[in-house]
Length: 307
Image (cartoon, one colour):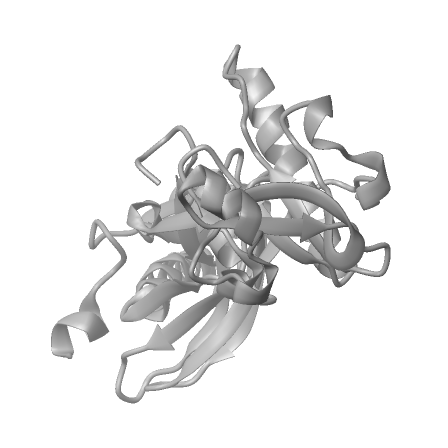
């Protein structure tokens, strides 16, 4: 714990840069120093010494202010590519008696500000982040900086958050996901109604999750295996979404992944029971329920790692 109370970020040392006010104060300090040397005036010497002490005090206090601060990301429940997100970061002060003031977390040009952090306490700030692509992403280079106590210098430390990996889902766009507008023979994505009406929609192999009452016994006897009947039903909310991309180019693949993810989310939001069919597996509605995470995870990692 004592080490954490003294540590200064990833590199365990701080960088310093004067602010506009600091540059003006430094220039004024040099002017007073030259005036004191030229005139020998004791009052100017005293003023010059006080100004130098302000500079030294500022450096020491700002160093203590940044010491012992641990910053950790708190990822939201879902991150989407090319979509700005307010991400929460926890700031913990490991110092025993000394609070920290005026702390700013900077990430990719965006900032979150915390005016006061008591000792042995944790508080949170929010910083806007945006990831460029789906799959596993790392955070940009992050800094924790302060201008406390006088605003003459900006002192900052590196946080090393770029080692944190986060799963980013494909970008979600607004699409027309009316099932009547999609058919399986129109491309890679198809949606069709399945129900229990009077007209047979299609025949398929029986699975353990199917209702045995819908087995077509005559066809099963001829085929030597159990065959299921699927019926048309205008009132059914069950749809089948197929994802079978042709990887002509990376840009085309990304477009198809975004389209599939957006259509899936739109159907889920419209209270459809969606079976998502992919080249390697099928995500059934019974498996998914109302959670889109398994499908979004599959699409996020498609073509990058084994899924």
